[in-house]
Image (cartoon, rainbow, N blue to C red; front, top):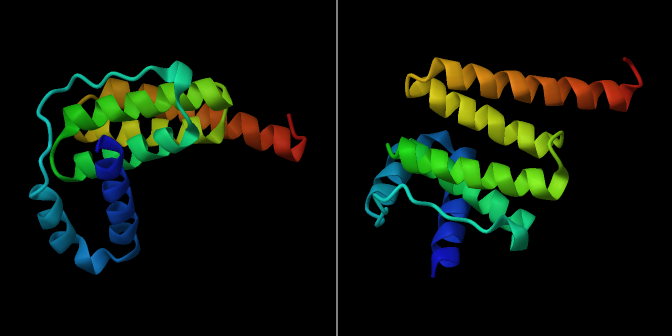
Length: 136
C-alpha cells in the first residue's frame, strides 16, 4: 500500500512537473491525500533499490510542495542514504538530492544547512566533471 501511494505521488509529480499550468489543481489534489504528520521515517538501507530512492525523492518533492517540510526532509535523507549506499558518496544522484535538500533547508530558514548541502553537491558535480573531461 505504501509503495502504491508513493508510486501515485511520483507519477503525479512528474505530470505536474511537465505542465506548470496545472500546478494549483494538482496541489489541491495532493492536499486531499492523507499525509502522516509523523516525522519518523525509518528505512533499512541494506535491502533497498534505486527505485525506492527515486520514489522517496519524488515523495519528498511532493511533500515540500504541500507544506510538509519536516516530513519532506526525512524522505530526502532516506533517499540520500540509499543513493550513497548504491552509487557511492560521489555519484551525481547524491548531488541531485543534496541540491533538493539545500533548497528545502534554505526555504525553511536553515541557511547553514542549505549551504552545506550546496557545497557538497557542487564538489560532487565538479569532481565528476573533471574526471569525465580529464581536466584536474
